[in-house]
Length: 184
DNA sequence: CATACGATTGACT
DNA sequence: GTCAATCGTATGA
Image (cartoon, rainbow, N blue to C red):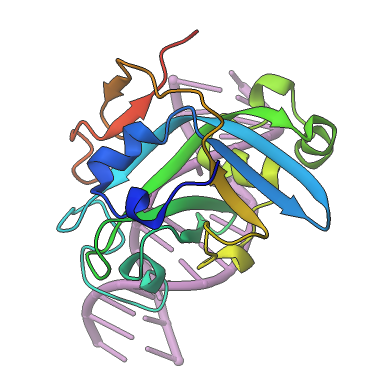
């Protein structure tokens, strides 16, 4: 079932671990691709590592908008990274989706990625490529009936998620804001 | 206007 | 393990 606006409007440090085991689904022209979220990272207000740290800009405007929307940006001029906007409107926080395990649309994912199954969607740029998330999706409402959505299929989040430092950033990298489902 | 850099990935030694 | 690719954004002249 779909998640509510209030569910997303909680603090990023709460939403990030709660997103684990939720299903990220992309419907494009009737074609479905989906995966179970297994790794996330929280980006907070007044977080030196967050894109919102220096205030609103053209790129990060979605992060200052209402929760439950998708923030997509171009990373290293090549890759796309997808985030879920969280918290009160205007607070500028989000959760980065770092990895999913494929559920539906495996054939299309292999086609898009051209990599071994293990590397289909085990990274923030990889999952966007595998699921077909584009820069056009920046600002997309996850509660809408079309396109990209996040669903609860009844699988509970892990009782004890593995928590660690964030990855691939240069500032405040030591903050324990990275959440991952323990290996089965 | 000019330029340095990044919430990454994939190829290569 | 190391390192180049690649370009929008931010920052400074």
